[in-house]
Image 1: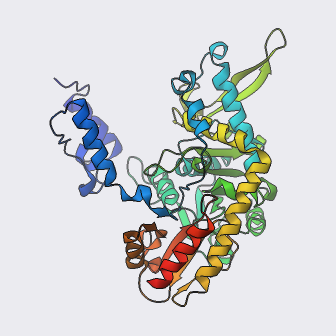
Image 2: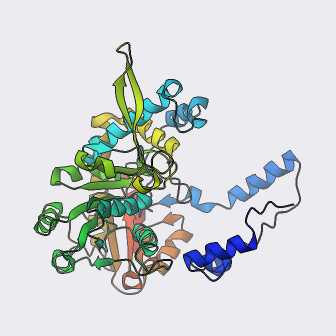
Image 3: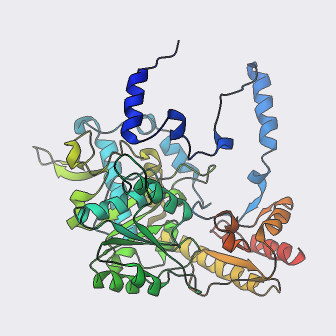
Length: 456
């Protein structure tokens, strides 16, 4: 018998409070084709038969053997087997939120080291113990910007160069806040387009900012792989006393590109997957979140700090935890209840293995290979690299005629995942696709892609 804790009258009261006509209406944003009516599982199998069945199924996963140039927010960098071996220690994968410092010193130190590395990578003063992913981190940064202005500024200028999934997540967060009480509304947000170079249109940003603008949000590098002009954006924000927020999909870019903190960015967020775990069907990720020290009280999530005990020995504690479970609800900065701690630990281990010189070396390899591939593709008569702004390891390719989807499908049939079809996100870009290169690609891999593109 199922346990249903809410009575019909309680359900009706809750629905009336949030302005929804029915429980089914709550699932309206989920496309009907994606809704699950129930699991239709086959009969159970004995272990040997089941293992054969799973092996047969795995052989159908052709993408596992394909040559991949996919990116768009998830990147296939080298993750040493030692990372998994260390994660397999039971004290790590069974660890819970470290409420009791005296029995959680290992977990707390790992968080402290993670925060330190995030600050170094982003060039910021203080970082939290991680978010779910880059998308939730971006949305929380927007909410934080509003809190900093104590609700007096609500408007957000969002660059079209921010990852589409990040933008959708921000939209979802704000839709519940910016409507009438109990009803969802359109977020108080303006989208600034990208210009011909692939960067955020600075004139559009100037025209979009009002006296009610709390923050400008840009990708760094942006979704199209282009490195934004943060110095110019910082100057525009300063003119209007607005905050500047950056979202970084590819942390390896910051091995060579100046970190956001050097340009006076107020909140820098990002996705740490590339430095933690391989791409796994879109997740899991780990959200990086850092800010200026003066804003630390408005930062969501948890923060581990270093101290000394009564004997003067080094120790670690939860210095700040501003969620509802720890402080009065009206003073909480977020209702986030946990974070991707195991993935944060994986990133900490991998980053420690790399070291500063290894981080830079990997970045140089990515940039060198990406520039080689970009030049080769630009030389093909039917393809072009449309954006002139500098890039790191990811760039847009445009067909001279026709959509990119058929081209990508033809290459997929040849065992090459050539890139991300940008038409998936916006039909205006249906003739373009996004190519990502990492240190795992050899010169032969790059030449093979160019050869097949030329042949098709």
